[in-house]
Length: 417
Image 1 (cartoon, rainbow, N blue to C red):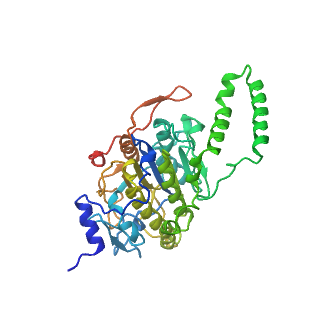
Image 2: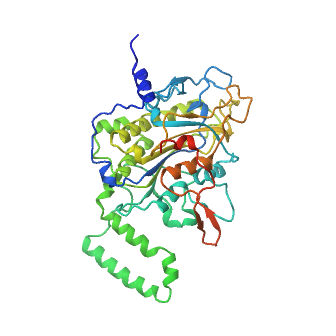
Image 3: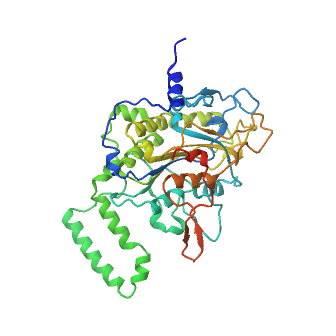
């Protein structure tokens, strides 16, 4: 019997092989520098994606609903059939099917999964991307080193690290961006800056410390540097071939993934791409199929591009949301919030690929998953792979010692890191 394409890819994945097309841009990895510092790419599925309609389907059972499964290049593992292109690329990542959380509210759940800490009224914790940006400097990068692409109701923050570690937000990826070009001619712009300098110097007298805390001059200097930088081209897509743009898909998420690839080539340390619409208390199956139509081409194309351009080993990819969806299907053909036993994809950056960690009950009778994985443990694993001391304590502005992460690494994912 002849082997199918998926059979060949599964065999290649099992043997640790990969089939690469010649790189479209062999300089992509070189632009990141000789030491190849790693970056973090988070794909945030906002609203709580159903594990049963994404990475942990149970077709044919009472909890599976109409969702079908599809074989993947990870032997023995299925994902939802709405992801046929990703099914052929998923061996580059691992699947975690047993994440657990105690936060079933959107805002609190998003805070916990973005930071690794439950909400605390006395302290604002930094998002994972802010930690990476703080701990892994990027002196050659003239554009922001933490970028958020797309709209997100519960935005990542720099927390106690400071507002300078908030992400630079681009709501419509692929465009020219807002306020990136001076509104005046060069001569007039220079006169304005000189006048601003006189006013700022006068105001700073006797207030040096307080003025410095506002980050006013830092913000101006960084903005001017960025406005003059050729690296701004990374945000634009007009020079990408039409075939490449078509492969990623003509959606906000697809354009965000293509911009993310271009930002990674420049050495940007942390990127978030948000796909909204997963709060499917009603019409769960239609809603997930619609969003899969954006995610499947974009994520599969991005994984292929990162591998072909020798960037996947220096980029950790995390696909996650604030929680999952209930095994039971409600009267509105929806699924409700489910913070126990939800799923994510993680890989790249030297992490072990092709693993399936944990499992959930196909009958829906057992709430607790097998081999539960705590979110802080996942983040300790990611930070360690990025070369960051995840247990390092920093002193917050109010004098409180705080660890970057309270988890412990998952050694199975680090075995080859």
